[in-house]
Length: 288
Ligand code: SAM
Image (tube, rainbow, N blue to C red; front, side, top):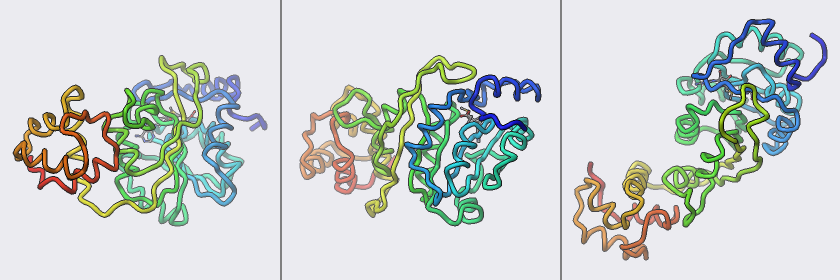
């Protein structure tokens, strides 16, 4: 294979044509074709030669190649079988890359980190397939994996929601979920022109640094509370919680809110993650 970096659009077109590859919309296939963006993602992810990296959806290996150059080892999980022979060719010069065929939502990531990535801590880097961004982030955060950071390209609006602070329009249950587990930061804004095929929306790269010491608490109850609180954004917190179907008296909710120092007429969009945590410990069990 000639020594030309993968992110040149001609090189990508040529390789895909050679294999008769057709992009699959349903697998969220929008490949990166811009070297500056590829390098920026890897730089912002802070990848060094000490790092074990997990990539989701290598596509034809454009980002994978840049990761391989900068990291100690890269394991990339790809669901489209048709890409496997292409990846064999495009990454043939890198002996620190391993491609795993599978669905990131199905595979045992804990085991994969143990067996192939030195047990972690691992940095995850990906240009995520947009149709499954939230389930993937959910799985990565909930499974207690040995991850140091997650740097992912997602739809701009989704990145804004993840990184939003209380009081902003984008703040919602996804913000609380992500901020419970991580410190999020939008690190790169990416126009739609750097993808093939071009999507309809712009993207952002968000870096989630995982928090090391999560509070000891009933997480199930906490996330039930958050879901109920944001179920009707326009309602006051006391009305959202008292009409959601929990087996709770309005007075019990009022007392818990007062203990935490949240006004009953406050709206969920103004309540911080810390206050939601305190409220979930003050409330009686949430039966539903
Ligand atoms: N990383 C490449 C790039 O930046 O050019 C491709 C990114 S493309 C947005 C998403 C990739 O994820 C595709 O290669 C797609 O086949 C793959 N994919 C989709 N769903 C997946 C899943 N559930 N598990 C693993 N890979 C998946």
